[in-house]
Length: 269
Ligand SMILES: [Mn+2]
Image: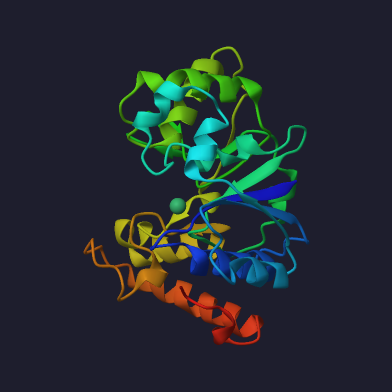
């Protein structure tokens, strides 16, 4: 089992998120030393790899541009439908060598409780979320899978047929699962809400329910455009306020900075 993450290295990069996640996976998650494959779109953000290595992960960097990610799947005609590689980032595990299980993890996540169960999760373990009372879809900020040639080929065939992907890679995966679940009802290992706790629940549930979720959460996802580390610097979106979740992130990021021997170790760019 290895970890895989995709990192965008533009102006609003996720470097601080990755460092806080690495620290939390070690300290709260009790994960053993693992290989963490970081797939960079563009140049690596300085300091991130060192910080993650210092927490005990063996970092393997793959510098591929968004275009390379696309190209590795072939199909020239699909190029025009791509926006910043969004369709591909959470399918980045498909670029990894076959024969292993990978845990793909977004870097806008904190680990809050023991995550060692992750090591024994089977192929195609996804959190499942309801889009309405009946229909479930999988969510892709964290999942465990082995690269599948068939999925790779289907993505390649599907991409040129659509102009937009409302949920980007999630749309692709959900379509794939829908098509194959009839033949293989056991295709999917659905994960419970401990793997899918979201900062937005801070306003969706009352305080007691929200805090109960936090107590049990293995992973807390900071979804949406506005990330806690953008505080005071994000000029495009006036995003909603999640004071408890954001305070928690800052608390853990500060601990992570101390754990690395000082906040100034990490150079913001
Ligand atoms: Mn995310």
